Length: 344
Ligand code: HEM
Image 1 (tube, helix red, strand yellow):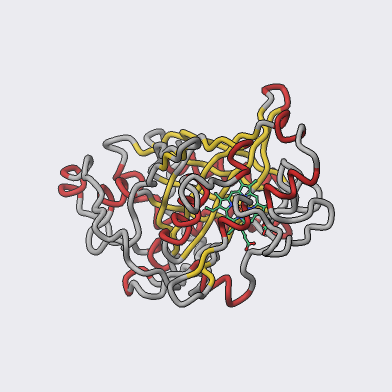
Image 2: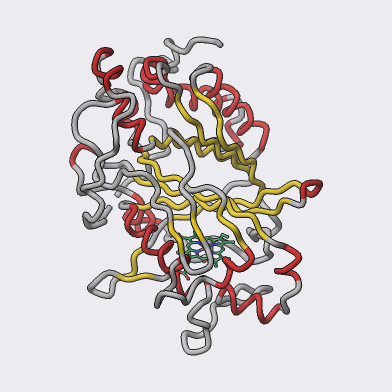
């Protein structure tokens, strides 16, 4: 949980694959360069690759869980799937460092990479989201976090992860018209001191009742969230940027199904009555080792695959997991690893 974050979702123009392919191996070096200018800000940056772009860039096996975000339509609320070839999740102790990272990234990837969604998130009081509740409390910690997010059962992608993002906009007038008790029943926790409601009193349509899920053996399935508030008062925009990492996207997808379709169907998440999802994306997050030496297509086959459809046959594989993907590794040659970056 950092003080600041920037979420950039970008698309890659047809014909710009070469530049992206040349730049990706320099990504970790570029992060190190910016981070080293303000070490105390602990800048990190994660890159995620979308399903369609994968086929335009890489040869060899495909990550099992990589497919386009699956849109959901419940009786009342919908979760749209929106365009996005890459996600950059930039986090740090200060916005200036995050902003510099975003600027350097866009310069390195060039004009063929277009930002289609940009959110600048800020920490809001004591880790509260913009609707006033402490957010992130039940995230897994330590080894459990590693298990929750890290791929272990796909030999070609060990240490990678899957990430799902959604931008939510809140109807603050309607939310603030609720009593504190009604708000607490929507979340399933108390507002001021952040205590979880008892299972026998927590409403079945509360957010935390619907997002706690278990596998067939009764083991809780967890994801790692790093939501950030954002907004613009002049535009009456008050939002939560949801971001969830998992060892397999089916875990996050089951939570989303419970929220939007309802469990049982029709019993949808009460926070959706005050929150509208306006974007939705799913990305594979490669390990540093993968990024430093990716299995790029040769030029000829890259051109052939610009419109390749994603393979959805892997969707139902079991999740499992290990290792944090965001820490840049040493390039091993004593350099910063940014030799091939070209200014715009
Ligand atoms: C818990 C807010 C969207 C998954 C929570 C909590 C809050 C919250 C306040 C309770 C404290 C905590 O444990 O963090 C929000 C808001 C959202 C949002 C404002 C967007 C409008 C989502 C989405 C997912 C999700 C889209 C999953 C797809 C979870 C999970 C928990 C949680 C797994 C922990 C449940 C537990 O173990 O008790 N969220 N959330 N959230 N949320 Fe969300």
